[in-house]
Image (cartoon, rainbow, N blue to C red; front, side):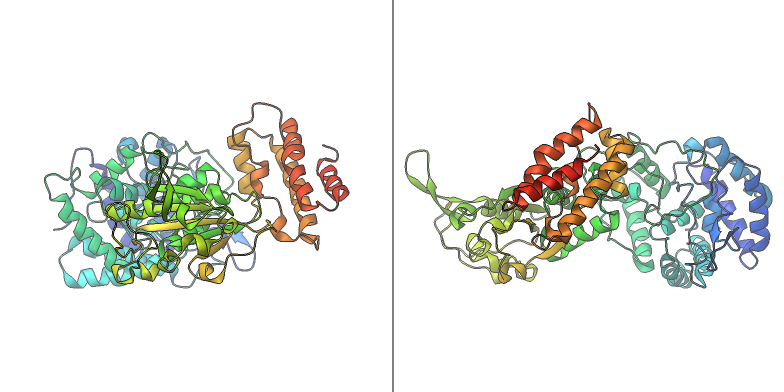
Length: 577
């Protein structure tokens, strides 16, 4: 069926959006008049002028020389004040000849918004590929035809063929679905962050990390069939988007500033959404970043993806780089919530044995020995009992024990391609519940995250048998802009003193790295200078206390045979403080 065109009700705004989309296609062959008129409308409004800040290959800057229809619609779908959004929409209505009235209240337009400084569907001209903007126009036109005739095989095929090149335009990613939803809200679902989360946690529909044109069309059909059920809480894409919005009303986007300085596109941040999602029980990548992870979001996503594919991941790096902190939060993000019953932790040490970790005889309360499962088999059993849920075991300081001895025969079964009954092995001890020697296999919904401190010279590297079964990720001290801004905003650290601390610790790390007896694995991580709680006292007092009671003892450990060296480095760290 062609898309709906309601005349009244909570989704009456869709009529205006659909007519804007229809009128824009008149400019597909000649965008210069459209740009000129848009620039005139924007110049009359006190908003970020999104049309003037292009950058060219010769190093110069200037106004846009081309534009796509999604970006045009984005001019009034940014986090601007309501009156500015209406004024921009009214300007578009005038220059395009739209007959439908501008929505009287944008509060009712519960559609995804873009950040004022990142609302283009393409990148700067100096980085843009030839044909990028044409690809977006082609997808826009194909979407119109598909929305008008969704059952027509030719329109469907043209849309799929146009979708994929448009999705590959740099900086588009999930934004393409947002633009399609603006243009045809009754036919195309927005897959912005909030909607994806609602699909997964509200409707039970999981999405892949990326989706191509065929997958997007298949999803449309899947959702339309779901909406047709009487027990479905929503029955259309606008309803779905509105419900996703309501789910996040507890944590709405901050009001945008009026910034006259122009636009600076930032590719990773597609939407002007809250920095994190704090819905009941849910935990994801955004929560990791918000909680104080100073890696870039794509790096966190990459770690999570390696964990999903390899099943086993070791985080290694210098002390204080947040290995244990990140391991637990990756585990929460993998299972989707902070759930202690699905995320267990154990610390390896030289005296830990197979009997402690896997299965063995342990003293019972009656003064006798009893056969019991260790923490690993407890997690294995829980994962077998609940195959629809993911379970994670975090092994802290995995190289402090003897992993090959502690894991025993289960070391072989850790491999991702051996998580099946066909690969099952008998354990050294029988099942404590029934006394049988039934073969055991590790379930595919069990994941292991280990941490390893490379600065501990008393330990050897893990053996090759274990190394082959884990993916390894190196964590570095993160003392850049993300760290600085976070401790200022979230931990009440004085900004100027934070910059001073940053330069002092970086200088100390350079000294440690250049020391032939130490090296880069002995640098000090950012955790040393990241307060666990917001400061209630003086920043100077806090840093001096940290330096003398935490950093100083670590330097003493590094230079145990040269106390004078450690003392001099500590004094250099605090010189003039």
